[in-house]
Length: 107
Image 1 (cartoon, rainbow, N blue to C red):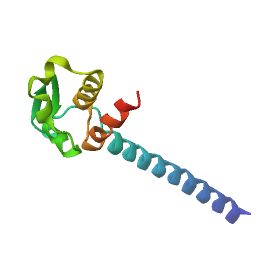
Image 2: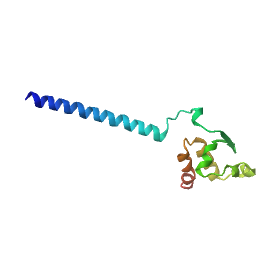
Image 3: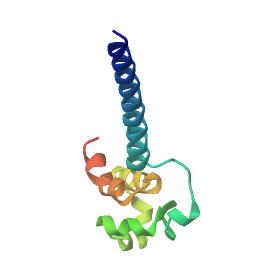
Image 4: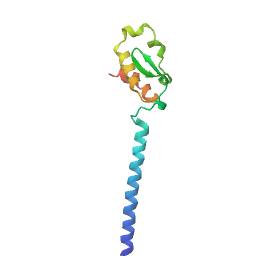
């Protein structure tokens, strides 16, 4: 009888430990995938002013040609341009920047 109680107690502790470990792991995965939301200078690249929007220059790796927003195009931006530039100015990662154009098209 005593050994079965010890067995159940050990099993209960193991289950609680497993749940805590999985919860901590999920919090780490969420933090890594979404970012912390804290703006750290060493995490950002050089910023460029594109028609009044501050955009990280590394987002050109997501396939955007920033030269198209440096010319006289700023005077007559479409709502799509405003949406893409606004999204790029708040994107935290290159992966998020890749989704700006499709997200703005789906509006």
